[in-house]
Length: 564
Image 1 (cartoon, helix red, strand yellow):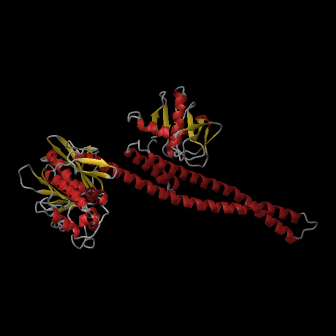
Image 2 (cartoon, helix red, strand yellow):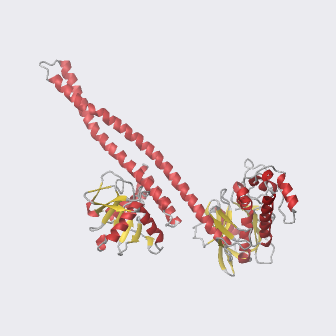
C-alpha cells in the first residue's frame, strides 16, 4: 500500500471513525491485527497488517471471533479498553499512521497506536502517554538494524527522513523538469529517486507507456502530458477527491481526468472496504498458491521415495526369476545315474535357494502392489490440488479448508505414526463432500479428497446409487443418489460432466467416464482409501467445460457443502 492509497483510505475512514470507541482487538495471523470500533453509525472493523509483502490499512467486514487471542492482541485490548479514537494522523509523504486514543473526545491523548507501512520494515507499535513503546508487532534488535532498533520500553523514534524532494503543486514546470533531468535514468527510476511518495504503481500510472523511457529521450509533448498527470495527482492529494478504479494490473485511487468513469468502485464512502475485499481476495489467492506449491513439493518427495522403493523391489523380484533354473539344476543332479555326496549336497542347496526365492517373490509382489497403490494415491492427490486451484466458482475459504483437509489426510496416509496419534486421527469429523442437486432433484456427491471418495462410494452408497469416474485417469468419485428416485438423462449427463471436470483430464474436450452401480464396487485390500475396483459398467462421455459453466452459474444456496 503506497502513500496515495493510504491517504485515500484515511480520507474515507475519518468521517466514519472519528470519534469512535475501541471495543475489540484480535490477531488472525502473526503480522495482522483486526480492530473493532463502535461509532454512531455502528460497528466498524479495520485490518492493520505489517506483513512484509502486503502491509496495509483497510476496512473489512465484521471479523469472526478468533478465540482467546494472542499476547499482542491481549495487550492492546487491555491498554485501549473503553478508550476513544479521536485522531487519525499521517503527515508528509511517510507511510506512518497514528491512531490517537483518549478516555473521551476532548481529553488529552493517552495512547497511540502507530502503524508503519514500509515494506519489510513495516511494524505496529503501541505507545504510552510519554510515547514509550508498550507493545509492538515485531522486535527490531541491534543486529537487525543499526539505525533504528526498537524494543519494549524504548522511546519511540520516527523512521529516518525520506530521500528526495517532497512533491508540491507550487513547483513550476521548468524546475520540476530540471529536477528530473538531473537523473539520466528511465522514468520508473527517476521519479521515485527525485521525489518522495512515488511507488512503482504510481510511477506507472503517471508515466504510462513511457515508464521505461529515459528522461533524456522525452519530447516536449511527453513532458507536458507527464506534468499534467503530475498536477492531477497532487490535486487529488490536496483535495482528497479519491476514487477507486480496478483494472487488470491492480487498482488506482486517483484519476488524471476528472470526468473519467471506467470501472470505479468505492465512490460512496466505501473505498476502504472495497480495498479490503481487493486485498483479501489476492492474499487468499497467494496463500492458496503457496499451500498448493508446498503440498506439491511434499508429494514430489514422497513420489521420489516411492519410485526408488518400487524400483528396488522390482529389481529384487527380477533376481528371483532364477528359481526355476535352480530347481532344474537340482533335478538334473539328482537324476544322475550315481550322484555322489557332494552332488547331493549341492542339489539340496539349490532346492533351498529355489524355495527361498519363491517365498521372496510372493512378498516382493505384495510390496510392489503396496508401492503402486501409494503412487496412485499421490497421483490422485495431485488431481485434487488441481481441482482446488481451478475451482474459481468456490469460495476461497472453502478451498483453503479443503486443502487443509487434504494435507492432514496425506499426513495420515503417507507418514508413519504411533498408535496414539493414529487413534486421534481416526477421531476426525465426518467427511464433507461437495453436494449439489441434479436437474430432477436428486443428490449428487463429489469427493474432494481420498477420505471423501471412500465415504461416498463405499460407506454411504445405497443399492441403486450410480458411481462415475474418469476412465483410466486420477480424479474425484461422483455418486448420483438414484436410490432416492429415477434418474433421467440430464442427471446422468451432469454426473458425467462433473466426473470429467474433477479429473486430470479436465483440459480435454470430451472425457470417457465409467458409470457403475455402487453395488458393483469393491474395496481393494491394502490399498489407500477411495481405491476401488469394479465389475461391468458403461462408458459414457463427459464435457468438462459444460460442468464448469454449470458450477459457475449455480446460486450459493444450491451449491452447499454439507455433512455427509
